[in-house]
Figure 1 (cartoon, rainbow, N blue to C red):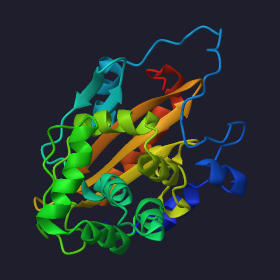
Figure 2 (cartoon, rainbow, N blue to C red):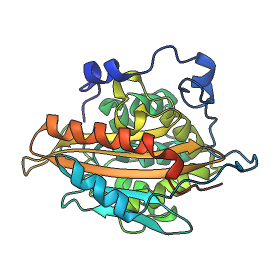
Figure 3 (cartoon, rainbow, N blue to C red):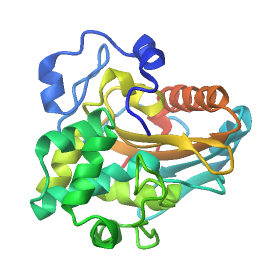
Length: 285
């Protein structure tokens, strides 16, 4: 995924005037919304207002039928349960894998913090490759990143070590949306300092990268996109969405024959999730 590919489209949708203090706390707040801190949950008392009907699998299935491309969407429910709809045959990780790469490099003490910031906030490939190479590249880097995943909710993903794509040697790893959601459940609440740093940058996504779930404020998001060998185009996002007195985890993958059709799906998902945020399963740290 090349940074800035969506710049003109995203800039038109980006919110203007985000206060610098909100950035330092981990994300921009929309009008009337509080800025999010580095941890998504707030220990304040739950609202006494009636709860709306919760989102369920039927709702998500209906959403997948309304969009112009194939899609899989996963919402984290209570405990280890997931609400999921749709399926994607080729769940290529693309730049979403930059999150565990950055965490691994910070944890090992090999990361340049500027590279971490650039890899997450503007999805810079060169910065991410430097982080990858700092872990030893190849098999050594792949094993280290896979250890981060397997230790924190995702025991199924196999991180690819080879330079399959010259721009993103690690990006062709297959990362299922449900495995990604389990990893994000850990990332939402962990006190691990390396993960907290990366999570904070996920709340500071550059305006050129704000689309879909990252256009929701506050949010902590990483996206990935690219052209599959099959000719299909993929966009995916993983997000922690703070709201009310807790947070929700949402991951999705959209895949279609053209970038424009996939973009319409991503916009539709962002709009739908934003409109139904109060109905998403609420989790607490």
